[in-house]
Length: 239
Length: 249
Image (cartoon, rainbow over all chains, first blue to last red; front, side):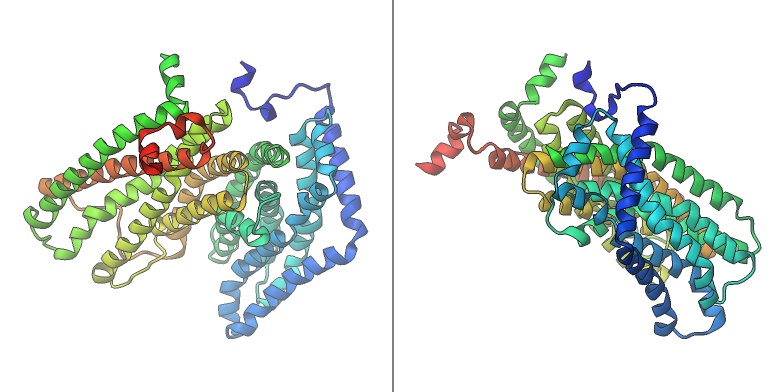
C-alpha cells in the first residue's frame, strides 16, 4: 500500500517530533537571518521605496492616493516577499545543508514549516508593522490603517508559504528569480484581493469581517497544505 | 481490470495505442468542426441584439470550457504521476499543457474581439476574464518550470506538484476574483444572465465543443508520442518501429 502514497505524506516519527523539528528549523533560520541584518534591512527598504515611488509616478492627490494606497502597499509587500524567497532554500541547498535536513529523522514538512515561519518573521511581520507608517504617505487614516496592518499580518504568512512552495520547486532550475515570480504571483492573487479589499471595505463603511474570515481561511489552508507541497518539492529537488 | 490499465501505462504499448486513436480523433475533430462551422456560420440566424458578432461564441465558448477542463485533466494526470510514479501520466500532463494554454489564449483573444463591438471595450476586469488570464499565467508557469529543469523525471514531478497546487488555487482564485469584481465596480454588462439561446445556436456550439474536445485529444496523443520518442530514444523497442526504420533506410 505504501507504494501508492508518496513518501512525504507518510509520517512515522516519535511523539513531539513535529513541534521539535519546527522549533529547531525556526530557531536556526532566524539565527541565520539575524546574522545578516543588512540583508533584512535592504528588503524592508525595497518595500518602502516601491511604496514611495507610486505617488511620484502618479499625481500626489489625496483622494487618489487613499484609493490606491492599500493596493500599492500590498503589491510592494508581495514583491518584497518574493525578493527574499530564494534565500529560503537556495543557500541551504548550495552548501548541502538541505540534503542533511531532508535525511534527518524529523518530518520534513515540519522542518519546512519552521523555515517558512522564519521567513515570515523576518519579512512579512516587519512589513506589516511598517504599514501604518506607509499609510501616512497615502493619506490612509483612522481605522483603515489598522485594518491594513492587520490584513498584512494575516495575509503575509500565506505569501511566505506559497512562496516557499515556489522556492522549493525552482531549486536547481534555470531562470531563478523571474521564474519564481511567474510561479508564485498568480497563486497570490486571492490574498491580494482580500487583503487590499479589507481596507476598501472599511473605507466604504462595510464590515471587514468577511475579508478577514477569508484571509484566515486561506491561512489555515496554507498551513495545512503548503508544508506538504514544499516538502515534496524539496525531495524532488534533492533526488 | 487493473492489468489492462497497467499495460497501457507502458510507453511502448501506449505509443501504438495513441497513434491509432490520434488518427480517429483527428478525423472526428475535422468532421465535427466542419459541421459546427456550417451550423454556426451558415444555418444559425443573426442574433437580434448582437448582430453577427455573436457568432464568435462558436469558438469562444468551447475554448473557454476546454481551458478549464484541460487544467483539471492535467491535475488528474499529475496526481497519478505523483501517486503511482508512472512516467506516462506525467507525459500526458506535459502533452496537455500547451493545448490548455492555447485554449485559454483563444478564449481571451476571441473574448476581446467579441467585447469590442458588444461592450465597446476589448478588456474589462470582469471576473471570468480575470480568472481566465490568471489561468493562462498558471499554464505558462507550468511550461516555464518544465523548461527550466533539465532532468525530465525531476521536471515531471516538480510540474505535477505545481499543477496540483494550482488546481487547489483555481477555484479560490475564481471566487475571489468574482467577489472582488462585484465589490469594486457595478458592472454595467451582465454576462451571468445569458439570454435563452436558440436551439440551432446551441447545436452549433455543442458541435464545436465536441470538435474542440476531439482536437485536444488528437493533439495531445500526437504530442505524447513525440515526447515518448524523445525520452525513450535509447530504447530498443523504439528503434524497431517500422516508421523509424523507414526513416533510417
